[in-house]
Amino acid sequence: MSYSGHVDIRIGIANSPREISFESSQAAADVEKAVSEALTADAKFVRLVDTKGTVYVVPTATLAYLEIGSEESRRVGFVA
Image: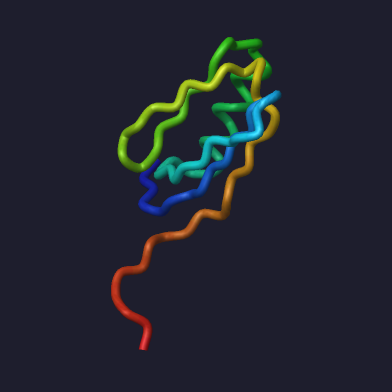
């Protein structure tokens, strides 16, 4: 699937006041599917990648919530 937009992802970690926040070039549906499949299969980790290629490996046992922002293509230029 070809996808050129970006989606903001926020991941809450149980028993931690901080969250993981990054931008991904993966489609929102693909991110949701990867996390859902990991949780359903009782996988130990879920793996996500940001727009810079950084890999996030999050233990599913500590996953408190996942927030997936709306998909939007980046605009280039100036607003008049």
